[in-house]
Image (cartoon, rainbow, N blue to C red; front, top):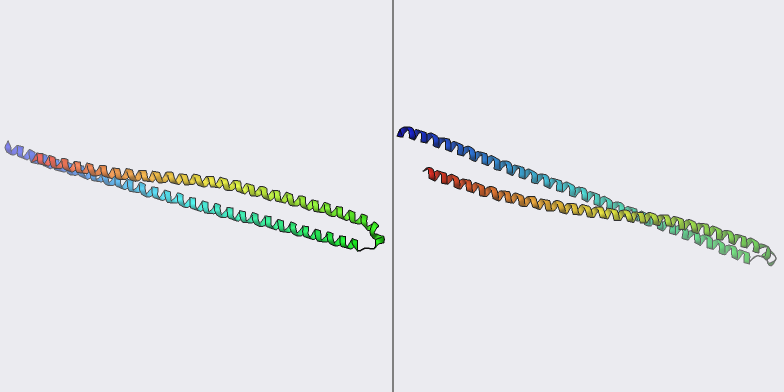
Length: 208
């Protein structure tokens, strides 16, 4: 009976050792699987963050470059229109002065006749001047309105950039949270491994 019990005890010990080894192997597999999943999630998160940041940087640069080009184009248009109108006004004033001097130098006998002609030409020039002035005012208003629209667009784009900045901040906070979660899981698995090792030693001592 003692020999039989001894054989049963040996078989039980062998089965226990086999079950313990299988249990430890499964635990190691689970730990490796969890670490692999965490590593994969971390890599995927980092890749998503970099993609979002690159897209944001490209969009911001494109918006800033477009805004600068449009602003410069508007400045050049306003300056060109101003120069053209100034040149027209100078030419008209010069023509008017030349015509007035020519009229003054005419003979006294033609003064009365030319007076009516001069008045007519002055009125015509005034009308032409008024037409150019109205045209200049209209074009300037259109340019100013376009500039205001560009300013409004710039304001909206600035709001969108601010929203993207907040989104990046939220993603950064999520990244920090998952890092802390990963460290916490590492500590928990380390503690559990220690406890399992201690339990194994206790069982082994109890068996002895």
